[in-house]
Amino acid sequence: MRKSLFLIAFMLLFTASALAAGPKIGVVNMQKIITKSEPGQNAMTQLQEKFKGAKEKMDKQKQAIQTLREDLQKQSMVLSQEAKEDKEMDFKRKVRDFQDMYKGYQRKFKMEEQKLSEPVLKLIVDVITTYGKKQAYTTITDAQASGLIYADEKVDLTDTIIVEVNRAWRAQKTEKGTK
Image 1 (cartoon, rainbow, N blue to C red):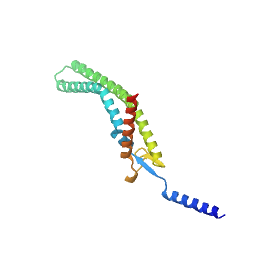
Image 2 (image 1 turned 90 degrees about the vertical axis):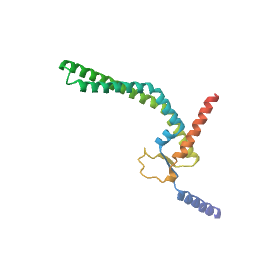
Image 3 (image 1 turned 60 degrees about the horizontal axis):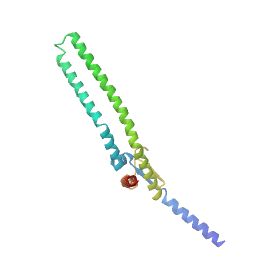
Image 4 (image 1 turned 45 degrees about the vertical axis):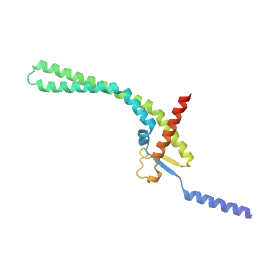
């Protein structure tokens, strides 16, 4: 009987101390992790390199359209009605072609961005999950996506997670290099 009372008192004390500690909550800024971490920066560099030529081509075409617009405005008073309409039609066609090219560029860019960001996001989520389990967090949430308005700086794990993501990414690269 005495052992039972002692065991019950011990359980109540343990439960009370566990409840007093409360849940362990952390927040991260996923956007900052993606932009500041090595794998995120690597993916962005790859994306920029891949579309560098397309961007230059679009910039040239945009400049050509701007020049054509300026020429049209300058010559509008001296051109005949027919010549003016021809130049306007040419201008509209070039603008439409540019818009079509721009939309195609955006579509390809988004697809490539998604393709490159998928493994980065998976790595980040895996690192956050592992870190949360090791450090006994009840919840770790993305501060921006959750609509979080306020969180004490003590629960912000962003910088710690960036270090962990970089460490995990380097380990993956080393692993792939040895295979």
